[in-house]
Image (cartoon, rainbow, N blue to C red):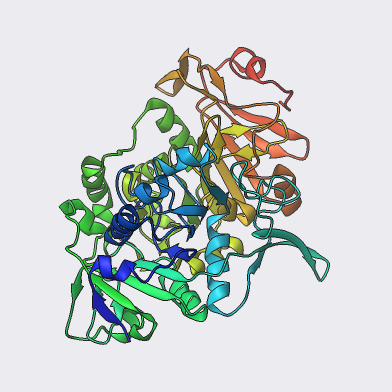
Length: 503
C-alpha cells in the first residue's frame, strides 16, 4: 500500500548500492524534487552511496546545479547507464574525467531491456547496435577507462542470426514524475509531455522487490479513468506531492490538454521557441540543408527528425506543404504532431497519440519508419557516421542507432565542415564566404554510430545532405550526386575531401 510522504521521507527508502531507474527524457519530465531531496540527504549523511542510475534518455534539466547533478558530482553514484547525456551539463564532463563508470547504450535498447525485466527476463535481444561502437567486437558501451563491465552488451547468435543481447543490472528503485495520484494511488500523466517507460520501470522494480517513488503535482479524489491511469496504485510505495513547476503558457500546448489544429502548429512553435532558453538557430546553412533534405519526403511517409540541423527539415516541409501529408514521430512516444526543438525536445505540438516509449522503439526497430533525418559529426570514406562523440565532448547515441538501423531511407543533414563556416544563398546560388577549420569528412570516423556496411547489406537508401552538395552511399563508398548552383565541384568539394569519391 502506498504512503503519502515528503520528498525527504521518501528518499529514505533508497539504500546504499541500489540501482535507480529514472523516467525522464533528455531535459523533460524529470522528478526534480526527488533528485534534490536525494542530494540533501547525501550532503547530510553521505548516504545513499554506491548507486547505479539507469535512464533510457538521460535525466538532466540543462542546469549543472539542479536535479541529479549535485549528488553525482559529489560521489554518490558509482555507475551511470544512459542513452543520452546531453541535458546533464556537468555530468557529461565528469564522464570524460573518469570520475565514475559510465555506459552509453542505444536509447531504445535500454527501454526494451527495462521492459524485459518487467516481464521477468534478464535482458533483450536486438539487431540494433551490430557493427557500431556498442558492439563488444568493436568498442563496447563503456565511455571512459573505468567502464569495463562486459555484461551489459553481448554478441550472440540465435538460430543462425546475429544479435546483441542487452542486460541491465536489477533495478531496485523507480523515480517517476506524474501529474496526479487518485485516492487509490493510481498515477495519471495528463499534464505531462510523455509517460516514457514509467509502467515498465515500476513493473521491473516490483519484480525485483524494490521501491517505487512517484512525484506528482496533486492529489485528486475522483479516480482516473482506467485507461488514463498509467501506473496502478498497487505498484506504488511512496507518493510525494510537490508544487508544479511554473511553465510558460506556450508549453501548455505540449500536454495534449487541448486540440491544436495543423494550421496553428507554426504559431505555437514560434511561441515555444521564444520562451525557450535554447532556441533553434535559423542560419543560412541550416536553411539550405533543411530545404534540400525536405525534398526527399513523400506523401504518407512516417518520419523521425533528429536534433539540430535536421530540425530545419520540418520547417521547410511546412513551407512546401508536405508537413500535413506525413506523420512525424519522436522517440519519447509521440506520433502525429510537430516535434518541439530545444530544451523541450521530446514533446510534441498537436500529437495524435503519445504511447509508451518501448512501443515507439518497436516501430523504429522493425523498420516502421519510411524516412529519417539525422545529424552527423563525422563521415568517413566508407560512409560510416559518427554522431555521438566529438573531440573532448560527449552527448551519447540516444535513439539514433535504433532509428537508422532499419529505416529504408536515411538522410544525414550536416555541414561540409564546421567552426567558422560562412555560407550565403541568393536566388538559389550558394556562395561559400569562408570555410570552416574543422572537416566533417574524414579518413576514418572517431567512433561508429552508423555502419555503412550494414546499411548496404540492408538495402537502405542513404544520403548525406550538406550546404553545398549531396552524396549517396554506394557499395564503393560515397558518390557525389548533386552539387548546388554556385559550387565549384573540384575546388569546393573534391579538393577538400581526404578520400576519393565517385562523381
